[in-house]
Amino acid sequence: MGRHQAPSAAPSQRGIIAALVAGALVVAGGAYALGRGTGSDDGTAASGNGPACTTPPLRVEVAAELADLVKAQLASATNANPCHRFEVSGSRSSSVASRIRQDRAPDVWVPDSSVWLDQTTAGSTGSAVTADWVAADSLAHSPVVLANPVTSADKLSGEFASWNALINKSGAIHLANPHLDTASRLAYLGSRAGAGATTKDVTAGQRIILLSRFAATSTSDLLAGAEDPSRSTTTRSEPFPISEQALAAYTKESPGLLRPLFPRAGTLSMDYPWVPAPDLSPALKEVADAGLRAVTSPGAAEAFAAAGFRGDDDSGGPVIEGVEAARFTTLEAMPTDARLAALRQWDVLKADARMLAIIDVSGSMTTVAKDTGGKTRAKVAEESLTTAVQRLPDGSQVGGWIFSTDKGGKGKDWAPIAPIARLDEPEGAGTHRDAIVTALRKFPSYISGDTGLYDTTAAAFAEMTRTYDPGYFNSVVIITDGKNDDPGGGLGLSQLLAQIKTAHDPTRPVRSITIGMGEADPKALQAIAAASGGASYTANTSDDLLTVFVQALLAREPSQAP
Image (cartoon, rainbow, N blue to C red):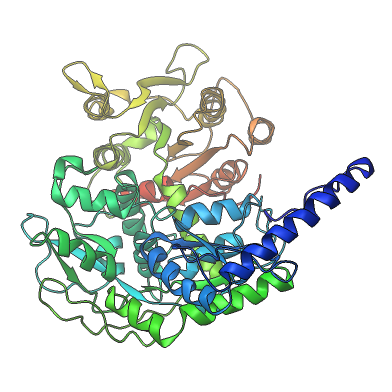
């Protein structure tokens, strides 16, 4: 992993090289005799010790906020043994995790959190890692707190209950991308810990759809937004996750802007593990062990504490804006598989929807729906779809077809009421969202005919497959209250399923989501959904339909292989 031997010299060159090496050793031996025990300013040995000091410097990549402190402590190891040399650089943990997967690993890694080891597991898909990276010990700790803006209208007053409540339910919060930023990664994972959100939690799904769209790149960007909201991706100053140590360092330079809040239910901490590469040579392992002793010594612990970090028992901690460090509860860590699943859910939900809704307007939609106070199924569909469209993010692309029989002319059962376009795209005197709402309010005028379900579904799936956009979650959402009933003939169920399965491309997936009302055929709708790895739901009231419509938008991973 990044430590490859150079190819051997050709036989004709060996004599020359041997002579040069011998001369170099003489010079190096003389230099070492004059300068034995001295070190360079950056903690690396100034000279070697001939054949006995041939081990190369240990390459150590450290989370940036700890890099200078680690460098200073490792200098003591070099002073004790000049052959124990170190090259220390500050690096973003997400970047190092990526390089490890690309077979460009350091000799020792000190990420800001052990959760980044999830990305280096041997056998991971697409990973070049051949053995697991295992933490030896932690150097320091810093809990993740909420940076609460002092003067913003979005600030929280007092404590807050939990990351789960704030991220998944309600409240102003601004996250950074958890694939890049550790504080937001830990806050997001904290919201999924214990009795946190599940993949079927509609409210949590809606929240992540929103939060992921406005996610910052890093804590630095969030801090910049606290100083100047116009530099924020939300153009507002909202509370955000940050490590306690980073907030303390920031408030020393920029006082009066932010205060820390701890969730009552507990939080996770950055733990800065010392992680040696699993394939170190014996000589480099000796250097790494010496380095670990240096950075976990009592002197190192004092230096880290002075810089605002806490100890292994979470003792200590910085004074922030004159307030002593608070005691807090540590959340139980999730298993690796659960953490990776939570991050996959973020990825799935952050993609905007690109959806074609096909809506049954056959005569049976005038039937009064049960438990609705006398509303027809058409009215239920109109109200629920209008509310759903109004709630979707601006970047979503949405279009609509109505269908019964011959709606688009003889033998064509469907007709468009809205093209597929971004909801915030200008259209007429308003936006595309406004145009869809206007079209939905004309629902009663569309009602007539029988149920040409199968032909319409085939056409819609073919259209979304033809116009597939990889930047979106592409789906066909089918809303119907009856069985396929097409006096003009058309496809049978087996023919429809065969077409969907043939057209379905797992690398360009279009999901069919079916929502049945009234006398809809549940087995047929389930089969249609399953053919593309989609999902099938049943709904009758406005609340039911709105809920399952949102669930349909969240059902972005295949529920069943086609």
